[in-house]
Image 1 (spheres, protein in one colour):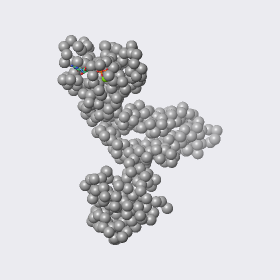
Image 2: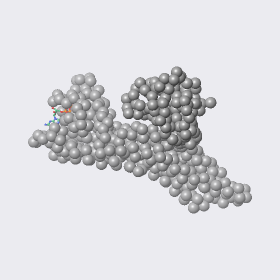
Image 3: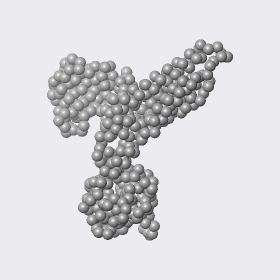
Image 4: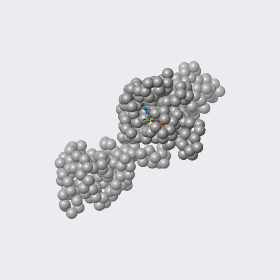
Length: 423
Ligand SMILES: Nc1nc2c(ncn2[C@@H]2O[C@H](COP(=O)(O)OP(=O)(O)OP(=O)(O)O)[C@@H](O)[C@H]2O)c(=O)[nH]1
Ligand SMILES: [Mg+2]
């Protein structure tokens, strides 16, 4: 018998409304002991909530959603209460006193939905991303996964593999043992075509990039105006600016969305060879590491002195004769060139990040898709039907793992812990 769980599923109080969800076998009983009455399924009703002693807790809109045809697949009740802290505390405290009820763990409602087959793992991952999405690009990518777009794609691939497997079986069944014809060119072509389709998906930018943002590091010698430009780009005074060379010591990061695209801007210590300052030296080492890690470097130093694909910036555009000949003229003080720089960065980021409408895979999904693609690659080269059938089974097993049909408890723990309580 599973526990019945409850949690505040709406945002932190105070708010206009607080939605408390109850899910599990005792949800119906909990609802009737709170309200003293029964409810028609899937109809909202106004009801007075009372504690065990009969004292009124709140007047709430109540929804009774009996399982299995609902979000979690279990009996569920929703209480739409007044969104005050004390109201939420009083109602949850009344629930805590009921037999068989306990507060939900993070993501536990979704985990139950997964356990009851209401959604698969790719959809659950998409849902997790949707809840943390902060930019338009993130929202659209997550929606596709949460809505089952990727799961349907895997289903279609799996269909193709099943058809291939069926042909393998019939080749084995209906041939004399000594006289089995080898797979023909058409069969091999279909295996190869599916493999190259998986490869196209694997070549796309990784989904993690969408979460972390396009990483832009500002680099150059001390006093080049890096921190000033950094502040201008993120539109707040996060980094200390001064005319003392070597002001910035540590790496400063700031996430920000430009044109709906997620960015992480990184300010670094000015690069110079001669310094006796131990701390500045560490800062310079960290700056070097950032240059290697960044997706894009804004180079404020001498022309050609930065990494290969760096964007050359000519700072101090407001001071005559101070900028360099080549590079984008920018003044963080007057704002000259900042709009143009942002446009360049947005364009570069769009190229490097997953495209809208094009599903991006996370590391877990890539691992299984790589396993499927490799098995297809091996299958394409096999002349022996038995070995071929074995490889196709490996492909199907990889698809099953993608959808979570063969996932371990550890893996599920990690995934659902990412969710908030109440989801
Ligand atoms: N006039 C003008 N002054 C600027 C501009 N950008 C930066 N400055 C000034 O140049 C000085 C150095 O700027 P910072 O942004 O601290 O330079 P930095 O590259 O971060 O220097 P370190 O952290 O020491 O490596 C400060 O006094 C800024 O006010 C600019 O575009 N125009
Ligand atoms: Mg600085």
